[in-house]
Image 1: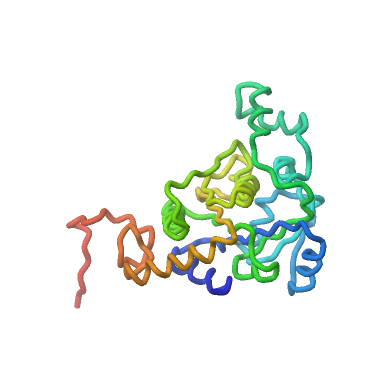
Image 2: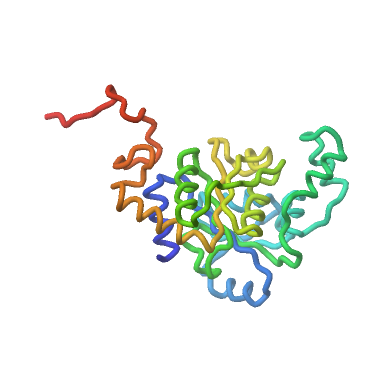
Length: 259
């Protein structure tokens, strides 16, 4: 499947509200140059902002965004991406979450970080991921049942059970993608306090990250399940809506054809 076909299937069958975000981490300057030559149009932050704000352009407007460290105004994301070392400001920034600064330092140091040498990051709707030869991770902003369907299909497609995800204090969007990329595992976590407001997740979206090398298998499993069950819905097989919240086998909520 092409990335455009994958996006069409996911948007239609899971009723996604946002485009899945393809995330690419660049370490090779030749690949950066190839990406810039290949993409028809890309955007960069006018002023430094957060990583979850970069993703807004991809998931809401369908834009391709590329930036290096100068376009990232979030110290927490800079730390996760390996673009800055641990400092007093980063520790103090976690003080409101923890018992004391010693605990804050330990918690920050326990976060997964990108290997050193990261040059830049691109985010794009999944359909445009071919401009950088495929994503390193695919980030979904979705609701509870959409996240569940993605998790179920991932487990079946990769023969993984149970799933163990990684939730940190702060850094849900940035750190969540980093952990998924480094570990090459599915990740699912709530919005952090920063991404909730800066990243505009006031609808209560859940973050789901899938390694780029696994996304084709997940979509293939979704298609296989549709062929078997008659629809994408696990809650009500045959129902066209994956999050239908009608009680299973309820004798009262039944519809019949009328004249």
